[in-house]
Structures are given as C-alpha cells and as structure tokens.
Image 1 (cartoon, rainbow, N blue to C red):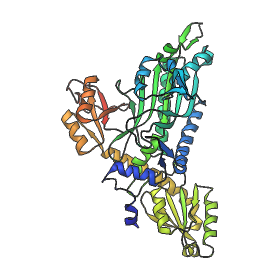
Image 2 (image 1 turned 180 degrees about the vertical axis):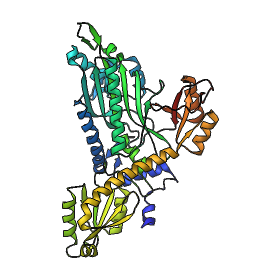
Image 3 (image 1 turned 45 degrees about the vertical axis):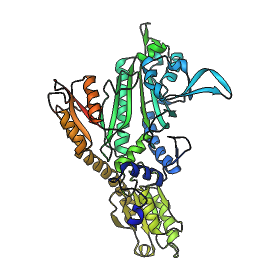
Image 4 (image 1 turned 120 degrees about the vertical axis):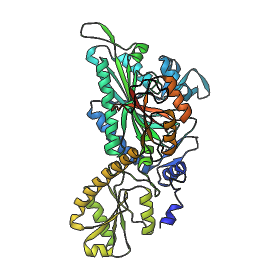
Length: 476
C-alpha cells in the first residue's frame, strides 16, 4: 500500500514546496481557479475553516464583541486619509475603474483591509464617552494583489475576520490588543495544536499606520516561520485623520484610541506544514471536520453494514463520525483517509462483530488498537484527547529542536544554513542592523518576544550594547 501511496505525494524532505501543493490538492482542500493566485476552497477545506472560524468567533463573542459587515468597495479619497496606511497598502491594491461600460468619477478599491471603512462609520456613531467602547468584528474576504502566491499562505483573495475597536483611553486599547492576541494564541495552541511565540513586531515590520503590532509566530516543519495572527494598537492616529472624537465626562472633546486584529485562512497552511507528513494531512481532532472514519471490512457480508451504521449513530454522541460504505477496496479507503488527515480510523468486519470489538487506527502514530465494544465510547474520547496533546507536544519538540542562539552575524548565518528555524539573538534596535541581517541572510525579525532572555550583551549585527532579544527566521 505504501508504494501505491507514495507516488501520489512528493516526499517532504525531497521537495517541501511540491509536497505542500500535492497535499492541498490531493486531500481535496482546494482547486485552482482561472485567476492567477486565486483558489476554490472545496467542501473539505471549507469544513476545516468553518471549525476554526467557529472556535475564533465563539471567543470573539465571549469577549464582548459584535459582528458587523462593511462594504467591499472603498472610495479612493477615503483610503488616502491615513498617509502611512495608504502607503503601506498601495502596491497590493486592486482598483475598480469602470461600472459597466462607464468610467467611474472616482476609483474604488477592493478592500485590502477595512480600517478606513470602520473609521468613517465610527465618526458617525461615536459622540460621547457613553458610546465607548465600540467592539466590532467582521468576517469577510479581502483582496491583496500579491506577486507570488501559494494556496492558503498567500493568495490574491482570502477569508478572515478583522476586529476593529474604539476605546476612551490608551490603556483600554492596549488591554484589548493583548487580549485578542491571547485569543489567537489560545485557538492556535488548543484547537490547532500549534505552539506559538507571542511578541511585538519591530518598527520596520509593524502594520501600516499602527503604533504597536503584536504577533503570534509559529514554526513550520521546514524551519520557516509563519505569522499566524496579528493584533494592532493604533493609538489616535486614525482617529485624528478621520476626526473620530467623543465628549468625555468633563465635557471636553477627546480622540478615541483604536485597535485592529485579524486571523485568516493562512492558518490552514500552518496546520498543514506543522502536522503533515509523507502520507499527507494530519489534522488535530479539535479542528477535524471528521474525527472518526468508519471503514467496514467485508461489507458485502450480512450484518456488517448495519452494524457499522449503528456504530456511527451511537458514536455520533461523542465525536464527529462518518462512514465510507462505497464499493472501493478497504486499502484504498485507508490511504484516502490517512491522506485527508482524519484523526482516527475505525475498522470493523465480521470477526470483530463476532468478538464484540473494533480496531482503532491513530493517524498521528499509525498505531492499531483493539477495543472491546463495551469500552469503545470511553476509549475513543480519551484517544482523541491523547492525539490532540501528542500533536501539540510533537510540534513543540520540533520547535525547540529548531531554535538556536546566535551572538554574531556569522553564527546567525551558519545556524540558518545548518538548522533552519528560529534564531534567538540580541538586537540594538537600529533599523540598519535589521536590514543588514535580512540582506545577508534572508531572515527577518519575527518578533520581540514578551518572554525576554539575555542571550548576550551585544547586538548580533553591529556588536554594540543591546538589551532586546529578537526571534529571527526565514518566513512564509
């Protein structure tokens, strides 16, 4: 079976990029569309996104936010209002110049992000301190005209949520920014079993128009980093540009303090590259559209299918269960559901029915476990929890093995070549050093982590005194 399987998917260590492409297409997550850099998210891929989305949405609502929807189009004049913001997005903007056959009097932007739309709306609805805070979120699609694209990781159009909030004070806005970063970290670690490093982006890497940008960074199987969610503190920059003011308790006019935070379909790319293997996808149980796939053995024999369907109904109370009763051979089904990353395969045939047992096969370790019928529900629930924590621990171990310390630029270069991954190194805070590191090694600063360590006294690049430790890596 393995040989038959291997020809379908390129080995990870042979060509990681091709392995990734094979997995997203052959596991039925996406199909390519006729527009370069756009993708069709197929039912299995969308079911995965739905599960992730529901986990994020639940937490967003639990923290007091309301969902809204903003328009797809932004007038050019509106986008121009915040100088840094428009400069940051200008290269990626898609323009609408015609409506039908007529040229528009003012060009429209297909939203790359919705800050300016929320700002325009907030100006109209915020008047007094009693109107604050405004805690809004939207689930939407956005368009960014990327030069190089890859499914989920970087596409012209992608799906996401974007939260936009307005607060009375700088402290309130900062508290919100960190709170939402922690929501992302929680989903990544507890639902997707992806360990993250939390920290602040450098001035060079922060969001266009932000005062502070915070990020959760994760490490992929090939040693490259992926920015997996960001949260921005805008201060009063946008409020001043758009005139968003409120009357405080003393009757004085004040500018609001704003935040913005986003989580996108690129986390599916992270999930694939953190947990996948040479057989295809490996999906953590909490995120899996189907947690258990029942494969009946010798299903033409009397009673086997009925028994399998009864199992599906009874186990449906404790897990998301499906059954493949097609006439394809069991071997084909085993390969198919391993490739799709389904956490547990349940095999049941005439002998199992006779012996009042089933066989469970774990996707993470491929271990086979024989379980008696009277213990099945209890064992299955425990097994799904065990797979979830095993995937997290395995990813954490991989990240720790791929995290090095560098005290000089030569060491940093050597580490990246010998063992690609996160490099912890001190930085003096100078842009020139950050740019030189990127120029010499192709690595970027991923974040200034909240959990600081003093790995040396000197900047890794210039050798001057340094008190900030930064995570560096090549990134997607």
